[in-house]
Structure formats: structure tokens, C-alpha cells
Length: 355
Ligand code: NAD
Ligand code: IPM
Ligand code: MN
Image (cartoon, rainbow, N blue to C red):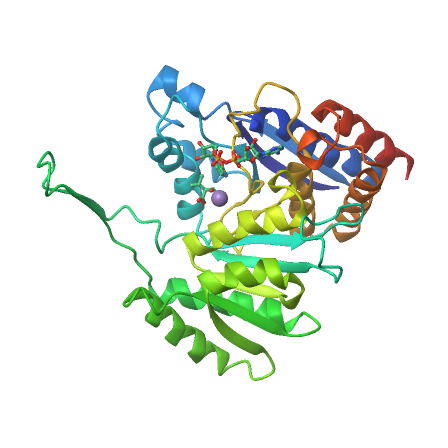
């Protein structure tokens, strides 16, 4: 019996509605497998916890999580708590402390879905490899001349370490090597950002020299955003800094039809620390509590966890059933349907059991 101890953090907003669906799916396939078991341990950390206790998780939260194989998270964020407090109190420390420096975000127009890019009929399937621990997301900076009406200025220092750039770029080359076309595009902005981005480009070119069989290209992120809309079928692997990858991955979600289905894995590739699996989307306060959140981002995220632990055929099985539902149009309103979160869950579990 393969047993995995999974820390579950539903978090805030629709995370509480989608996480149970992801868990149910994993439970169901574990039962089908017979030799696989998930031991769940749920944590009520997040903004409600903060409003009661003044912190997003206990002081020893990271230590507690380190005892688990992996983490399954919903979303973090509540309009009653400033985002920089909630995210820097829970999500970002987990990504950093556990060296989850790869944020893998697949983009694929699934069977049964039509991309809003209707003129594109070719296959759209690529992955975004986002740097996840440094870059533009930095705690270095502050407000200068606070209170001086005319001179008050906010400074935010980006920090790109050689190690940080090399490891994410090398990972992306390795992924590109495994694709049929062996193509890798790096998002840059070295025409406007004159310290960090030329450094990123230089490291990209150095590593490209180690992979002569990979067709490697640097593209300005603004142009890349446009090309992702005009010619998304041209991409196999895109590597990007923390902020650029964040923005491109919501765009990727939109290209697939809804950010409600976009999955994401925060990986510590060495396996020294737990990896964390969470959808691309946030806590969606505008729809939370209405039971209409699309659970498929969380379910596809569960597939990434299954793949990560080597259960490829179970992950395929889940994604096949997801695509059957999409074809049958058993979908939530974000995809133009009239179904509720629970209806999608019910249809999914019933079909999974009957495969
Ligand atoms: P969001 O992703 O929560 O929502 C953007 C839009 O997409 C909203 O209109 C929402 O209703 C819709 N949407 C998102 N997920 C959906 C789903 N599963 N089904 C149907 N519709 C869905 O982004 P936001 O509004 O910028 O952020 C809201 C809060 O979430 C903020 O506090 C933000 O900081 C936080 N956030 C957290 C994470 C995370 O925890 N990983 C990610 C992104 C945003
Ligand atoms: C994401 C989110 C987070 C990020 C925020 C909430 C800090 O947008 O996971 O995509 O920017 O990494
Ligand atoms: Mn984001």
C-alpha cells in the first residue's frame, strides 16, 4: 500500500468549495487503485483564522507542514484582510520555505471546450514554467519620504539570483527536451528593465548552449502576451519570471476557456520538501458562497498531484472523465453552463466509478 500524508488547506472563499471536490476525486481513484491511500489532515488557516488570531497560520505552521508529503491548497484572500498581509502570511512563505521554485502551469484546450480564440483550430497545449520564489516578488523596498505629499515614493526591489534563474531555466529546458518540437520560449523585458532582465537573458543564453537540440528563443513579454492570443499553438514550453509567469498563466487560463479550470503545481523538484498543489485562480470573492465555483481547476490540480507521485494512469483517467463532462456540457456558469459545483462533483464521481 502506498500511503501519502497530505496537508489540506482549503483557505478562503471558493477554496472551501473546490478543495473537497478535489479530495473526493483523489479518494475515489485511490479506492479504484486499491493500493493507494491518502491520509488527509485539514488546516483551517487563512483569513478567517487571521481575523480571530492575528496571523494567517500558527508560528510553527511551516514546521507542521514539513511533516507531510505534499500540500493541497484552495485559495487565499479575503476582502477584509489586505492581500499583502494574507498572501505574505501563508501562500508565499510556503512556496519559499519549501523551495518550491518551479510553478508548473499547464495550458491545454481540453476536449469538449472551445477556446474563446475561435479562429484557432490547431491544438493548443503548452506549459508555463514560472519562477516561484524570487524575482519581482520581493520583500525588499519600502516607502521613502512617507507622509510628504509630493515626494512620497514606494520602492520595490526585484531580486534575481544566478541560482534562482539557472534552476528554473534549466528545468524548462529539460521539459522542452521532452516535447516533440523541442521548443522553449523565455519571457523577457530586457528592452525596458535594464538590470534584472538582461541578466536573465544572459543566463538563458548560457544554458541554451548546453541544449543545442532545443530551439530556444527570448521574446519580450508584451509581445508574448499578444502572440499567446494570436498563435497559441506555437508554444510548447514558456519559462518566465515570477510576475511575468503569474500574468501569462491567467492569460493561459482565459485561452483555455476559463481561469476556473487552470491547474498549478508548486514543485520542489528535489523532493527535499513538500510540494504544493493549488489552482491558478484565487478565492473569487465575487462568487464565493454561491455554489457556482468551477471545481475543475482544483480537480485538474489533483491530477498534477497524482502525476507527481507517479500515478499517471489515474491522472489520465480523471482528466478523461473531466473531458467527458465538458463534452456533455455539465459545466458551471463560467463555462456557460447552469450547473452548480456539487452537480459537477456528483457527475464526476459517478462517472469515475463507472469507468
Ligand atoms: P480570482 O482568480 O479569485 O478571480 C478572478 C475572476 O475569475 C473572478 O471574476 C472570479 O469569479 C473568476 N473565477 C476564479 N476562479 C473561478 C472558478 N473556480 N470558477 C468560476 N469563476 C472563477 O482573482 P482576483 O479576483 O484577482 O483575486 C481574489 C482574491 O484571491 C484576492 O485576495 C487575491 O489576492 C487572491 N488570489 C489568491 C490566489 C491563490 O491563493 N493562489 C491566486 C489568485 C488570487
Ligand atoms: C497566483 C496568485 C498569487 C501569485 C498571489 C495571490 C500572490 O496570483 O498563485 O497566481 O501572484 O503568485
Ligand atoms: Mn496569479
